[in-house]
Image 1 (tube, helix red, strand yellow):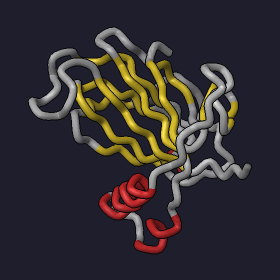
Image 2 (cartoon, rainbow, N blue to C red; image 1 turned 45 degrees about the vertical axis):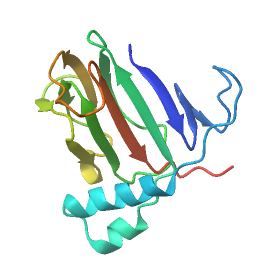
Image 3 (cartoon, rainbow, N blue to C red; image 1 turned 30 degrees about the horizontal axis):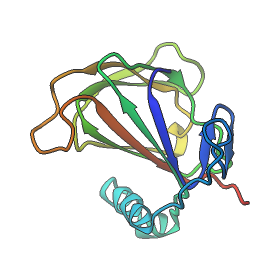
Length: 164
């Protein structure tokens, strides 16, 4: 993993969530913003989830990953949460190759997709624990006006199912 990460709502470090960034500066993590809850719900509606499913979606954390030109993210499962609610992922900046695999292992079968700035990717249900990663960022593909001249930001919202 060669991305830089900022967390909202909870602080994630491998295999655990905490309310304080104990491995960085000890500071309390910023609260999860209401506008991101609304964005997550809208994303579910836009991807075919029912109104009831969207209303029940209350994400409480977001991992905001910055990828430079050479950053990679190996195949992994998002399984540190207690909830299996969908993961909502939004891409900003340079395009990337997003590898979306199976739920059993890091090997094939998987599908490589090119995610562009503004793309939304939601995975839940039977695919919630699919292995996924980013084997490549495509430099100089960010559209004008996206806010980034170089690199890629990916925001992944999720429900942890955790309590204080």
